[in-house]
Image (cartoon, rainbow, N blue to C red; front, side):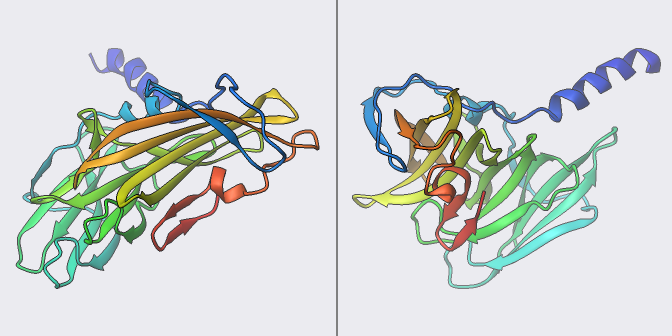
Length: 264
């Protein structure tokens, strides 16, 4: 029986090491001057970026119980908005199989604790930064939940009756940033007309060496811990030199949320 399980485990490892999402190659709707994008509104529909959101199985919030493993990182901030510092910690936990899972545990100032399983621990640092991502005035955590060949897969942890991972369409929301010289992904937290949003962008120059195809998904908050896709826009960024990178590199390769900045 043990020998029959080995090929299955190998297949799972190979699948988990694949890029979280392929670079978008959308159909161009307009052309812009070098370094800028001219766009048109498209009725929300699944896009190369939006598809990446629902690739991870749901991670349920639960009360802290079993003993954690090695600590991978921590942060002190006011996650429940009571004016007191809370403690968010990350642990590697032996799941009894060939992989260790990564666990996030929040202990609020009152002493109660809740935790979320983020997935397999493959050696990366889980915490990217702490800022308000959903506009409720409380601190939230931006975390790494995986890696592709050149991209970083991220998620958001918020306090909503306990520690919760932000979801969209009933599954944990996942967004990409970074990339390569031929494609890029970025994440921006912004507020439009007092509406907090998460903007996910993807660019690639696979269709032309003088143009970058751009897909921009806007996700709006419908609760502290739930996002919904609001719109998808497709456009083209023209460049005058073959394979030149668009002028605002971090806009298309980086992460920008509140005081948290991560260049691509």
